[in-house]
Image 1 (tube, rainbow, N blue to C red):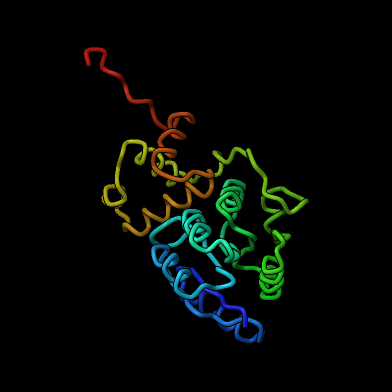
Image 2: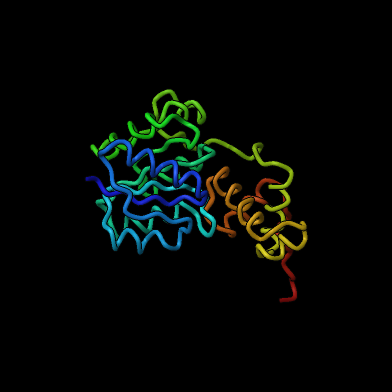
Length: 219
């Protein structure tokens, strides 16, 4: 049986994937988690053939998780299964070591086809993902400007991150939960292909959402 680990922060999605894998008769779900911080240890312990990975986990970026997994278990194939897709997130996922990319709302047969493809050593991008990023070849599109895709709330988040605000400070200022603030921040990074707060701040200045810090000439 082919061993699979699932990293997905929605319990219902994890359960659905588990049922699909079990019904196929080909795969065995050996571990599941909602936390990116647990994935590396689970992979090291179980040595799965495949990791099914959401990019927007509750406590960390799926891209960083993929990078860590490939360092400790390069033989483990990684198939991204996520809810939203942007050219930057696809490109960064592949650069981090992902082997395939599908959307959560696609049919179960599409997920099984993707799994079989990456396990056979092929890079896989589902037709819906390819269409979403404007690629007819199934390869990730690079260098696409996604700045206009930010919602007004995400633009607020970008400005506050550029000021050095923590997730807790953002949550307090906008009267939202810390988890929601973290999710908004992750969505911004996925849309823009960024990796951390410093890159968000640099983007904010470049795009005009924030001003560059002034330099005191007396210092």
